[in-house]
Length: 594
Picture 1 (spheres, rainbow, N blue to C red):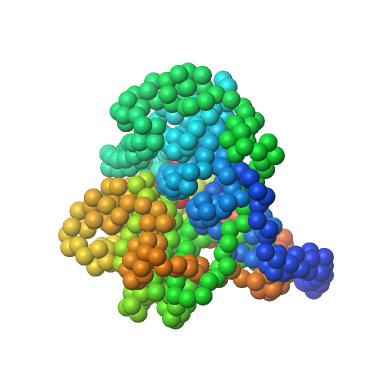
Picture 2 (cartoon, helix red, strand yellow):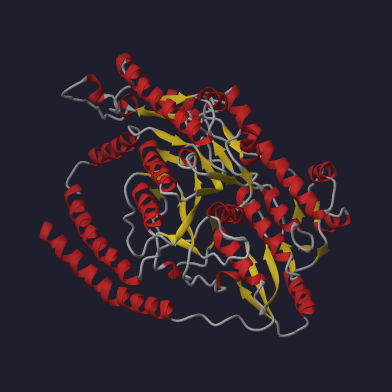
């Protein structure tokens, strides 16, 4: 039976590589060797923000096969290039009906404002703004345009922001599940939904703190662009909702009309009835690597884990892998033409050991005489702040979520719950009592808890010291502002955790200054690690085929086992992850715990 599965897997992998892989490689080679033609004369870019937006572009060689999703860096780079592109005459922005992640909205707003300095018209069109997520961010982006259009009878409900969390404590008590966790300290709220049935005072205080900071910042930015008093704009928005016509009469938007009418208006401004609308996702951004001294850009988006990415050539393995980031820093250090590094971080954290490896790479780059400027995206919290703390300078958006200097760890004890279904979990250990500490059958013993608590204290103390060293603060001062609390970029700057408020362009400008470049110098950006070639991607696909064969063999063996054993194995794999301490931010911008 095992040989049968192996043979079938090999046949399948071979057919896949021949009929799918080979054409893809050929297409990739053609795409890589050909330079896309410039857009037609009198083009109008159409930027659709209604799809998911990542922080950074994929370095996968087959990314062109995926749907035309956008990244913040692609939007910023594209708009900057379009400013000087004589073929591009104007820009149409399609706003999402729900919210945009706050720092994403800040970055796009800044890019739109800069694009307008070129004298090219920006029109934003909304089909309605509804109270979903951070909808005030979507309104703020619309307010940054020359003209803010809204579809007739559409609803403007940018009345505020809210979040909702689920608490599982009572359900756990009912079914015999124990969440046995340690937190450092009261604001490290990632596991609070498992420990309590409501917000603790500290949880409520911290959440209201960063939510209020984001809300007031977005209102202030929108008011600045609409040339309104922030207090007045806040009062008017909160008195909503409004239909589009009422929103126009109150000065919240400029025009009411269908998107086709906005497009016709743009064509009229361009002065050419045959003006072409070009999808922004398909707009060619010139990334040809230029010779000479430059600045390396290293990205880190997602949860931080140890090891290297093992994604196949056809998949998008998102996350921050410590070996990959460390290798990118080594490449930057060894490249004599790299004079400074911009480290783009958009991460809620993850493994403390992986974070430490990345921080060591940041320090090594600085020791080699290469300044490191961190550019914070949506998140740079907990482990995301750990890896940022050793930088020469830290730049954050006003609504970036950062800080969360703290740690949590523990396990779920599900033995009593499984026993209700006839599943008995027993444990045999050899060695010290702590060897069985993370078994799923029961909670920590008193001795195990004391040992685990001591370990958590050491990690927390180490985190404090790293921040103190990196930010040139006393450990006592860091302890005052740490305790796991999340801060926005604006709040973090006041506390000394961030140096300047701004986006990616601000970080690049600081890196130029620190590297000693002159304002008039043409300084290329070099993204590391470099995008793999299609052939390298195919190599990974071959490895994935071997992995698939192994998976099929394992499946055949598992099918002969009792179903309950498979379920218990899955539970144990989940609990095994808990043995690595987590430095994760306590909450995600979509309201879910990361």
